[in-house]
Amino acid sequence: MLSLTMGPLEQLYRERYSGFRNALAPVVGSNEAAHDVVQEAFAIALRKRNELRAHASLAPWVWQIAFRLALRERKRARLEELPEDLSILDPERDPGLAAAIRSLSPRRRLIVFLRYFAGFTYPEIAAALEIGEGTVAATLAQAHAALHHELQEVAG
Amino acid sequence: MTDVLAERFAALNETATGDWLDVRRRARRASLRVAVPVAAAAAAFAAAAAFAATGGWVFSTHDRHVTATTHLTLAGHTYDVSLTTIGGRRICFRLTAPTGTRSACVDRLAPSSDQYAGLPLAVPGGHIWFGVTVGFARKIAITNAAGDTYSSPTVAAPRGTKTPFRYWAIGVAGTARSFTMYGAGGRSITDRIPKR
Image 1 (cartoon, chains in turn cyan, green):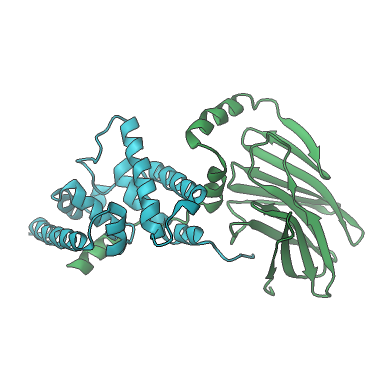
Image 2: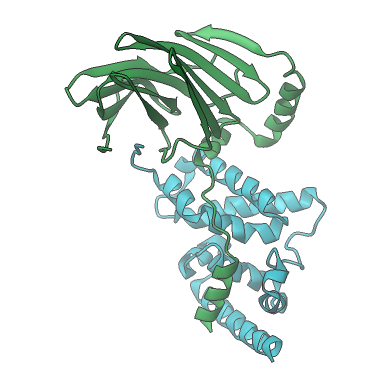
């Protein structure tokens, strides 16, 4: 019917909800748990939006909140901090890609998920993980090479 | 290679719209983790529904359902209007007229903004508008094509009712052309209503 101008946080939510959920689902183990984490993360961001530094980017800030919540969920379930088994949710949907993802370190997998599930730019990944953009570029290049190698082996 | 990866991930990406109203509702609560046991306790005591009246509306609650009922008169006809919100996301409405009842449930009165959602139902002589607001809106005013303005306060559920919404309903002669929300401090937002 009618709609008003959206605030930046709502706009981010509407544009990136699926990406955040898809990127967090491997961390918490299900789309339902990931949905809950995303909802709660944006709710916290809404409450604390005045704390965001003026120069800071919104998406990485919300991601950090969401990822901390996701890790807390894992801890509650007595799982390790960054899961060794971090992989796409339904590996049977693309077994080749799932196998290729498993060949990466958990840290690289997370960067790949941020890039391809959450749609983060390199600067956003750098801000979200508090690493340099060069590190992001290098890590993604290594991840691409490793995935390329793995996918060729699977295909072969 | 990068594009191939993007394509393969894109095939796995499940798109969903999320629920911004739910985010706002959660933001109002101090903590989800504290609220969950409270909600569970509320559900346990939900066998007996609670009733209360405020601002010309009668509210009843049952479990996570909050039903607000009022009546309106337009062009000599009286209508009973009922809005039921379920857990901050699903909304059901019912309009009872002498000629019959119309009802439906929607997950959202789409497209809703972060401030309000509303829906018109055509009746003889005009439309019955009703919906919910969150945030600052304390009054809704609708102006029709003839320049006449109809307004109604938004009504909060009685204290203790677990709903983030304020409820409103207005009978508008003819066709609505603009919609204005007024805050308690005089702030207002006006939006044109597109011609249907």
